[in-house]
Length: 267
Image 1 (spheres, rainbow, N blue to C red):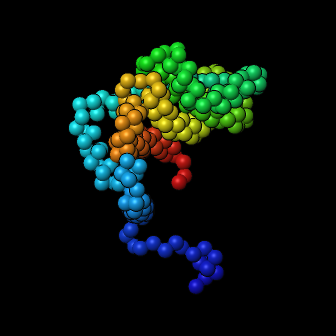
Image 2: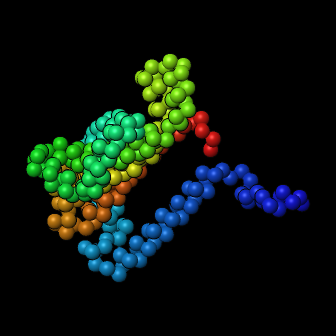
Image 3: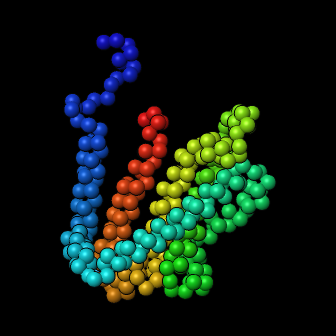
């Protein structure tokens, strides 16, 4: 056996077993352990405090048969999507502007710090005062939570653009718009997706706060309704459904889009 083999041993992997099979097996094992611990804890507590997996599953099946089930999911998804898209459309150019101008960065950096400090619950209170019980309340809260995250990440990406490439493009008489699309945008895309995925997750969570306080439908509203009636199994069912929906949208849209755009990068 050579010295190189001793220093860099190859990882042991059964022949013919792909990487994804091991990942799936590990996640299934974690899910089984979680369900087992949940069942053990639920068996020692009253069902109104901690319902078991079976009871929550029955509640979830019952919810799918209610007339408002699809409407509530659709409204929450619509509000989160609109708030997230507005945050991306506004936060991205603002981040580019702050990253390309130190003067603008010095002026608006304190304002950005304030926006990142204010909690979603406070934005929800302001939204109810300004917009009342409407879709705009949840959209505004999602926007105010997601936009600073996207703006900050894009700003950091714009600051890290290689100045040599910009100077070279200017020497070749590239127009400002061409420099933006050929140099700045490709450079900030990794930062944008990092902030977008974080903002998307936060957007889903804060939508519950906003819908709980200022909506008459949606998953957050149904959660509050179930909590008021001490229907803990429905609270768990709506929560698990929201998590599954968030993971499905992130894994089905954001991650594939990111992999497609960065397929040129080495793994």
